[in-house]
Length: 504
Image (cartoon, rainbow, N blue to C red; front, side, top):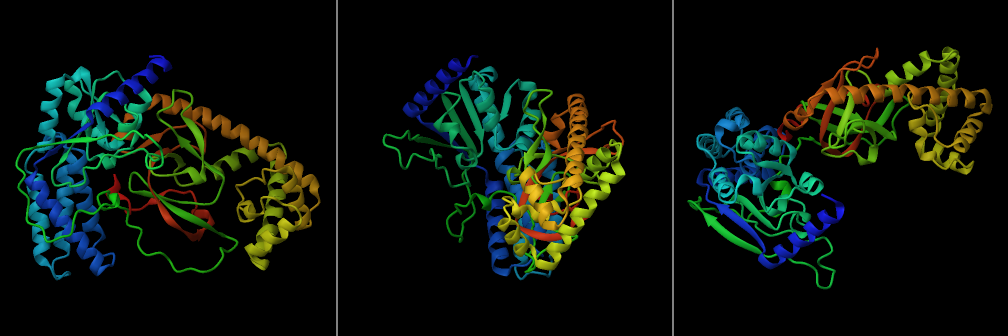
């Protein structure tokens, strides 16, 4: 399909939705409604009592409820459902005697067992709908990559196309009907404001009360903005427990599985010479990473064509869903530095030169304080002075700007040459080593089964170069809202951490 044909398809689909609106099918789900009620009571208790002792129970309960909303496949095709039910029961039993409302724990475990004992009514409704329009005429839209992988595994024998909303927009398959699994608010507004298909239906459990249709971000300000109406249909047993709780919360975070960040450390000091300020990144595979304020990090984009998947991502752009390529047990920066030094004829001399000016910079930061160093560097014309702490890292070769580097060396009391020349020589050697590793990584990625990234979120890659074996591709699950001070040698080295276990 040409770009013009694809654009025409979007215009025609948009006009159709404006005329007919989207369908929202709310399916009765009594067991799910009972579990949702218990989870809401638990969240209310957690807000009242506070503390981290409830984190595992809250996390597992939220994850199970999220799965009920976004992955309605039958139990036989939904193995993780039983696991999450077990986790809810296990953590509820651990809290026996620890909270005042023991009846809530009984209700949680009972309701969790019930939802894991019967196939989802939403899944059955989806199958009937697919049979009505034909598998070749529809596409199922999942709320996330893991959800898409689970739904695709279930529907593969039926020949149904399963995509995320982003993949649907990118691929633009010629389909008449899209079935989005979950409430409209869990999908980007473009699914209905710039649709790929002329018909869009959302299927969700009836106990999820918010059925509002997302609008374009500029709709509130635009004259004659496109507004998509909804046609609501209900199916099945609408029985739900009587609720003494307030209306359903509007915040999407109430339904999304949440990381367990713990309490924010109360530290009011600058990092020492062997410390860095870093943000905790939770990764797939029960891993985490301290991400410092460097410029970029090696990453993987599985949606790109072969040969263009391995790239670099700016540190500020790392977010949930990004795939990072990490050296297990050591940072890639450290391994690349060693490889670059080994490739230079005067590697030992270059290494000593680097250590000398970086050591003096670290001493200045320690003596004067980071803010004063930045102030003085700016006064001598160093435009990127706020990067001073990062430049003291042994693995960051030098400032990107030649002028900034020259003025930095002068401020430190170093003659510009030969230090400037050595650092530039090392930077070129590092680029060569990095490009070679990138080429080898591309080869390893091309040989790997990338579908594993959708199902497990991580994948081991074997690179032939010494010092780079055991590269791990892993999905970012969450980024901490605050920074912490950690030892420099801990930054960018993955370590085991259970804080994100309920996000997968």
